Image (cartoon, rainbow, N blue to C red; front, side, top):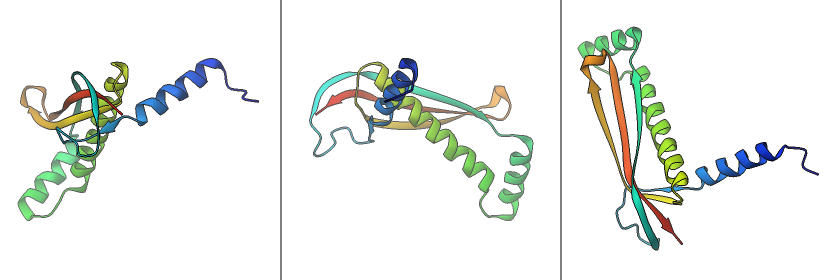
Length: 126
């Protein structure tokens, strides 16, 4: 017997639906039959680079090498934006997003902020 409340069960079902959304950068993915194109969707993720990450990134720029802190921040923001794209797709009744594009924009007026915009076409596939 399942002791979870109906709200918990509903949330788990929604989360499973979101996770099941297919993401691809391809416009016409091979082997996938698109049955309906729904709409263009986007997800935005703004994130700041704190002073310590900026300081170490600046040192790395001078002496060479990679900044693991900055790379981790970029990787986390990408994962967040792609999850949000899945959530947007699920909300409009899609089970896939095709033609995904990721754009990074530096927001100079906001200090050390970077905006990541993920966009694609929400579709239904078989």
